[in-house]
Every structure is written in structure tokens, then in C-alpha cells.
Amino acid sequence: MRVISILSTIRSLIFILGCSSLVAADFFDFFGGGQGQPAPEKTPFEVEFLNSDCKGYLCPDTQACVDKPIDCPCPFPSSQLKCQLPDKKNFVCISKPAVNNEKLMALYDDPVKGPKQKHKGVRDCGWVIQAWKGEV
Image (cartoon, rainbow, N blue to C red; front, side):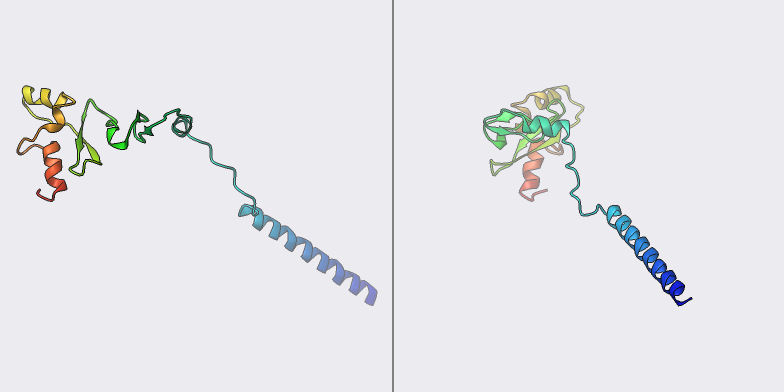
């Protein structure tokens, strides 16, 4: 009788140990099991950016290849003005002002003259420079 009791205890112990190892295995599988995660797939933009044969500076917003960062174009040139900041190293792209004046709109559409416009009460590159200087 005593032998049966010992065998029963051993079976119970083996059963408990077996179950606990299964639970532990599931626990670690649930959290990745210490295995490295697969690398995320590259986006088409990233692939295009990495495969560029640009020898100068590759603009991050437009992927234009230019000599230096200040030469980067705005992402939406038909609706944006490129305003160079007084430090001559940085620029911001702003929406072209919506004015009810055809001559003024033609000036803002000109890529050379547009950024040079400074009209009072209009948020153009003149306003950006004032804001940069803390005058607004």
C-alpha cells in the first residue's frame, strides 16, 4: 500500500512539473521568447531615398538633389512660398497668401519675386522675417 502511495505522489509530482514547464514555455512564447523580431519592411519612400544616386544633398521632403540644404525646394511650389530666414542657412515654406488682387497674386506666383514680397497685413515672407526677429 505504501508503494502505491509513493508511486501516486511521484506521478502527481511529474504531472505538476510537466504542466508548469508548459505554462512557462507559453509565457515566453507570448513575449517573443527572447527571439529577435523580424526587421520591419522598408517603405517605398525609404527604398527610393536609400537607393538615390545623389552626389550632393538629398532633400528629405522632396528628394531633390541639390548642392546644399538651403537649395531644397518646397514640397508644393505651386501653393507655397520659400522664405529664406535672415541667418541665410534656413528657410521655411509657407502657404502663398490668398489676396484679392490679381497683380499681387502674380507676384506671389513668381518664384523669384514672390519670396521678396513684404506687404503690410499679409502673411508673406516679409511677415515671416518679422516673426523670426520677434517683431510680430
